[in-house]
Length: 270
Image 1 (cartoon, rainbow, N blue to C red):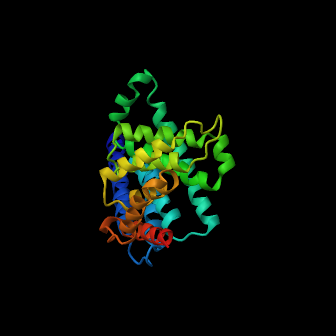
Image 2 (spheres, rainbow, N blue to C red):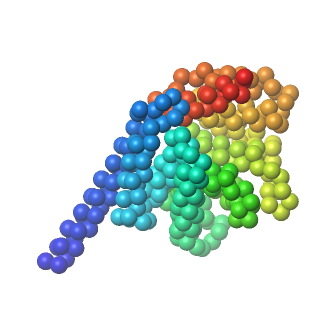
Image 3 (cartoon, rainbow, N blue to C red):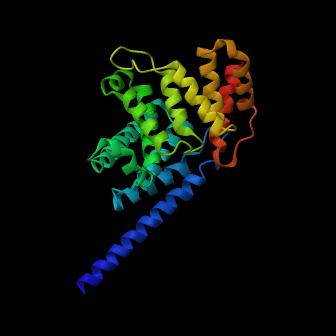
């Protein structure tokens, strides 16, 4: 009887986890509903975050729940019109979750460093986890420049982006290349901190992202910015990219995101 009861409890827990994850995904898919242009209504993504937190409570080791929560926090902080204080709190939570998630994953990989990538390829969601961890550290760093330097955020973001590229360069339409490109484009060169930063690498990475997804407004916008900053002789190319971004029809799955970058492109063109 006891074993049967334990088996039933385990089955219910698995079912509850699946239900929480399905609920979270459903709410996240509705994130553009009731949006005001490029500013999303907070309710759908907040419901998604709550469901992902519930899933993590049921299974703290769930990589799916961790990836989903990092992604949902990024959307809330970037596209829901949060105040500066609320946005900082959102990305503080995301950064802490990212740090814990990568630490948990790396603990499972103790062994021959040369076989690290082979081991990671056998871990579902590994590419997504490294990518969203890098994004979370990057967003947190924007509001904590001194602390991010002391904590080695730039090196972490580089390593996470390069790991995601090695695992799945096409993830989220080439987004690992976008992450790496933005790091090399936007980071100041500081001795002993970001001496590895390369503007050439920035342009190469952002061009890779655009090659993978030519309609990606994020790739268009950030490549255009990098060209204007570091390849001024190719200004005409940058303007064409900004015009394409500014007038792009929003993709159904990225409606708020595309409208956001279209507004930024229109502003920069002006």
